[in-house]
Length: 97
Image (cartoon, rainbow, N blue to C red):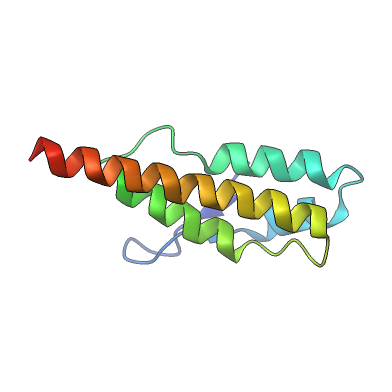
């Protein structure tokens, strides 16, 4: 099940219509959001891990969770975590060079 993909090799990831439909129609939308966030966490990558985390933070930012305050807060917390991890990884990568 593909929740996000790149339209082409040079474009950033985008949410698929499936991800949006699942989130909007699920009776347990918070559980679906948590699964989506987990799937957005990089499990493999090439190049800079910090850049991958930053791109996933931007992807989460684009996820439409309607007007649910609870979903917005959960999404923002996950996005902020990706940003914080990206900053730490960027410092580590800089120190390695």
